[in-house]
Figure (tube, rainbow, N blue to C red):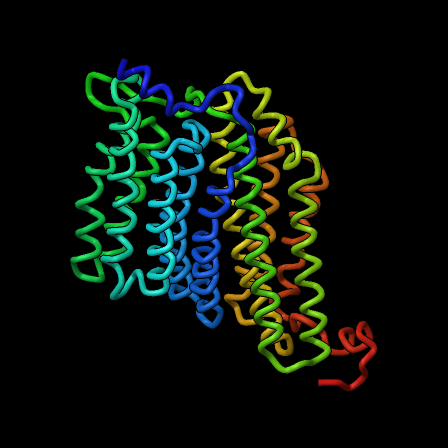
Length: 381
């Protein structure tokens, strides 16, 4: 009887592959989170050398923690019925924790480390326990208990990083997050009961693909927000107007490149896959990189629109060239996952980006004469 009641929590095979309104509501917290990540990256625009590397690494660490929360939630709603009250409560609770992580993120490495950590651990430890209890006697109840057990192992490391000396925060959090990701990759193995590889999970493949596509669009939306906010907050000039146009065109191009065939067919591929969990697991890592690349690229927009005149600072290339290059690499991986091959046009595009990098380090982001001719506003500054 208990197993039958627990089975009601599972997503039926005939359920809709579309995200529910609650899931779209849940994504609003991560709109804020991605904007905060972008702001932290943008603050590195004047840094060089080791300061740029460490600053980028710190922000990347926080982004990876956020991504783990979001992607676990996407898998939960692809594996369990999102219309069930228990799952809805889990999603809303995760949304609140994600919002706390988002608002504390700008100072998460400093005085708000405890709040960030407590919100993260509330999701990683408490959420799977709630799902496990709700499943009651169903055999799948062991999976969320595995997640909670592994999260409980890394929880002291997270807390030690938050409460201990600031110089130890990054190494401790890096260790804890690495274990959290490794546990997911290995299927959270436990003594005597073994592992539960996510590639073998029964999930709604079309739903998971839909969620990945939506997160990509959210990242693009954050880029559009950056373009509009930065351009609206600076004095007008032909160079800035040209940079604004180029930034929007680049965002549209990223959308086009992603959805041309591979991104568009992801839903169909996962719907037809005999084991959608396997493709879902590899696509999760691919979309992690895709979303990160869009955020990095959006920082390049902000830097160029704000200061389009002189030669770019050394750190700018990481965002202006590195973001699009990373996107093309991730998009090639997605294409390989769907078709088992890579289009030569992607390789050519990546090669061209690498070839223009030396020139991009010397030239102004937007040459003034070209911008004025383009906009037909001679001498305007």
